Every structure is written in structure tokens, then in C-alpha cells.
Image 1 (cartoon, rainbow, N blue to C red):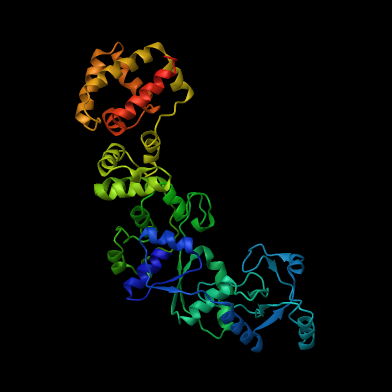
Image 2 (cartoon, rainbow, N blue to C red; image 1 turned 90 degrees about the horizontal axis):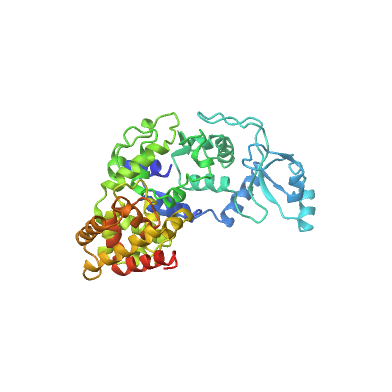
Length: 431
């Protein structure tokens, strides 16, 4: 929704205005590359109270003195919008004398809309499933999210409104408030929701499909933008916002909900990562690993580039770098039970001694990958068990059975790092 709203505004030469009510959501959108021109202040209590009083004076609303405990006694609203209960209208008929008496007793009140008997007939808007008066200003004077939304749009003189199709059931209440305010309202454009593989609108899911969760899983922002753009819009094959904005038309968005294909998203993300300039890939991997707590930024530029070169070839998400960061950005390797059993074998200890001797041919800190290839060739040739020499050496140094090539691993560990791990493995057998 944020992407299409941004493209729509930019393409029309309009102004993108963001709400400050959800700071974390705005941070996620900035990470994706979406920006705005202005920040709208939320509707404050003073503005809400003023409008609430006007609605009461016009007979469009009334003060409701019901306590939280009294509301709990009422019928549960299965839709849970705009309130969790179906109000029984007990305060609608209170006289002016009754209201004054309750206020004198110190009872606070909320502003409750007097819902008309007939729902407004607006194209694309469902009628109210049940008539129930709902609050627009709470007991503490704060406006409800629904009231804030309508007031903000009304104050901005909005002419058009993009609406997430999964929230279409809220529009009837939205329109009741708009009509109570005497506002004809904007033109509506329903955007079908992006569905999860299970067929539910993604906005209703909480298991890994929010922007922040996908970011944590290692997806790249340009891949997510492209996936979002192509979700129901055939012209969205680009990650350049300016190019997309020049082509975007609301009418071109498919009326059918697209389904998120995680396999396709993973492939797109992998292709995106492999297509990045090396410097940008180093930056992306570094940002991801630093947020995960790995000391990647503490390493020098040459080491970072060697690390990325070693792990990037088969990457699908940035999270794929975490496994090797846990091996190469720590002082020692962790061994599971099966690896520990292999390390204790006498033949493994022999291989450790053989490789320790072979390392004597490395000069300096061991940053030359070609020199390590030569050492590995000599080690395998002279080993008592050449068939499993390299496989076992990988287990000794990393605790892993697969991963980047051994020359890259050795270069990234350096001579000192290799010696520390060989010594740890040697101690497993009590040698």
C-alpha cells in the first residue's frame, strides 16, 4: 500500500505525506527506499474534542458515560471493528438533566456516533453488518484511530483514497463518520490485498511476513520492492521508483489478490544479491551481520571483501552469511557430537599433526589464498589418508561439513586463527 500510494503521488506530481503514529513502520519503509515529503501530525485531543462537541451539538453524536465494566456486559462484536462490543445504546436517550447529573458525579464520557438507520450507499463499500453506535473520542479525550483517519483526510481535502482490500469492511464506518462531519468524502480505490501462501491477507499474519521480519530473514530491500510492485501490477518489473512512478496507474492494478510465492521471492532475492556491485554487497552483508551481533564492521576492508567473495556465490538471503560468520567471526569453532567423535579418532589427530607441519610453508599472516592452495595440495599428497584429508580438515577448522572452499576459509582465519583451532581439536584427544 505504501509503495503504490507513493508511486501514485509521485506520478501525479503530488505530495507524499506520512503519518507519525507508527514510527517502526516508517523506519521499515525508509529501509525499503520509500520516502515522503511531509510528516503529518496526528490529530490531537483538542482537535478531536472540538469536533466531538460539534457532532453532539448537531445531533450526530452523544456523550456516553458507560464504564469499561459496563461495556464488558454487552454483546461481543465478532468483527471487532470499530469496537469489541455491540453498544446497546443505553446512553443515547439520556436527557440533558441526566447528563448534567452524571457529570456532576465526576463521570467521564466518550463521544459516540449516532449511527443512522440506513447505511450510506457508496460504490465498493459494504453496508454495515449491524447497526451499532460507536465511539470516536475516548474517555481520556483521545480520538479513535478511525476518527483520526477521517479527520486527517478531511482536513487535507483528500480527493482520492487508496484502501487495502482486506480492510474494506471498515469503510462503511469510515463513511458514517465522514457524513456526520458533513464531508462528501474522497473517491475510493480498492487495492486487493497480497495474500500469504495460506490464502490470508498478509496484513493479518504475524509469522514472518512483515517488512521488519523479512529484513531480519535476510531479504534485500530492492528485491522486496520489486516483489511488491509486481504483486498485481504487470508494469512493476523494476526496482527504480522514478521509472515505476512514471508508469503507475491505479486502474492498471489487477482487481484480483496476488498470492505471495515464497520460492519465487527467494529466487528473486538471490538473483538480486548476486547482481549487486561488490561494494554494495559488502555493505548489505555487513549491515545484516552487524545487526545480528557479529563484529563484521571491526574487520578491515580487505578481510570483508574476501569474506563476501567466499560466501556470496550460493547466497539466497543475507542470512546465509550468518552460518559462516558464526564460524569465521568467532575465536573458535563449535563441534557437535558427531564431529567431536571424528576429532577424537587417532587418524584425525595424525592429520592435524600433518597439516600443522604443512603450515610451516606459509609466510606472514596467511592472507595469500594461492599460498594456501599450495599448502593444501602438499598436505593431501603427503597425507597418510589423502582420500579424507580435506573433508576432515574442514571439520577440524570449522565444525561444518560444507561451506566456502578451504583456501578461502584458511585465508579468512589466517595463520593464528588456524593454529588456535588446530590446537583445540588436538586437545579433544587429550594430546
